[in-house]
Image 1: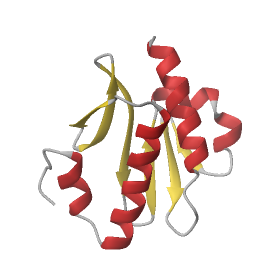
Image 2 (image 1 turned 90 degrees about the vertical axis):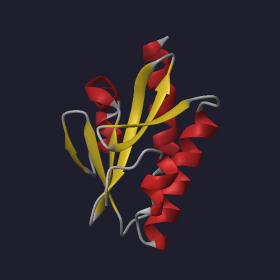
Image 3 (image 1 turned 30 degrees about the horizontal axis):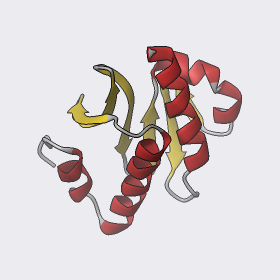
Length: 115
């Protein structure tokens, strides 16, 4: 895939079943905090709040990567404990339901950090 310019282009570059998951995550983020700005940063979908990066997500062969900065991940370490994590990242396996409620909680938390 070439570097996308929009989240729509990013999502369109994946098979239909992955597109559906990415679309659900996108909708979850917008439902959690209406009015976020969408962009592509680091070649992946990014949501901004008051000009600051809030969260990012990306699709990979076996998982969806979700990035809410190190602070966002530290605050939800217990919730993320069942997933593979790194500093500021968590991997949600594609063979499992996406934890959309958890994603929404993390997004709301990140907004409070930015405010």
